[in-house]
Image 1 (tube, rainbow, N blue to C red):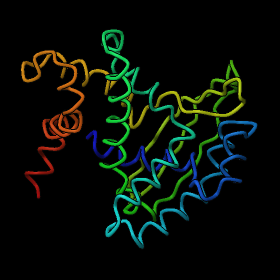
Image 2 (image 1 turned 90 degrees about the vertical axis):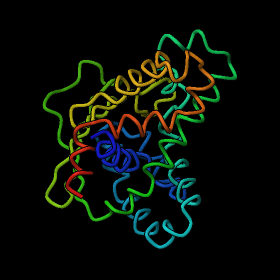
Image 3 (image 1 turned 180 degrees about the horizontal axis):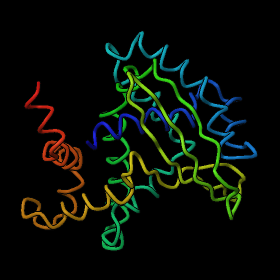
Length: 228
């Protein structure tokens, strides 16, 4: 379940961020008047990136990973995201551990799901109009829907515009799953797992394995294996 959710998530995140080689479009998007406009402006750019990625992603995955990371970096504050995932353990961590986890978290996400972008290049993406005006125009939930092979995925972006007047993603709810809380729960479970004995360095080193173990343990994942 979580893997499929992140497939949809990565596609939609890149729709907002746009490729780095289209800096003018990206700059226009993140500084748009509304969060919905920010998402819409960059949609065409990510489709171009996916089209280009099909030509080299399979043979040069590291290059593709770097492209995806570059796209996400202006929009996603990975250190802050990682801090929220660590939860109360963040206060116990050393500065080196915090930085190492932020890096591990970022690349485990990028490496695991970047190639999924190529598979979803033919999907239809639409930003849904807001149902009502937000109470705070600088904190907005944006709903986006992607339809691929008859399956619709809904992502709700919790967007915030800061002092720099640029839009950034603070959290996401993908198919009803709160991404930030989900990973926070996984990190806490790993810290309590006897396998790691509360060793934060061990949890950080094994973060990708923690994600894989969670995915394999879900009923949806088991069903897929059974039916394969």
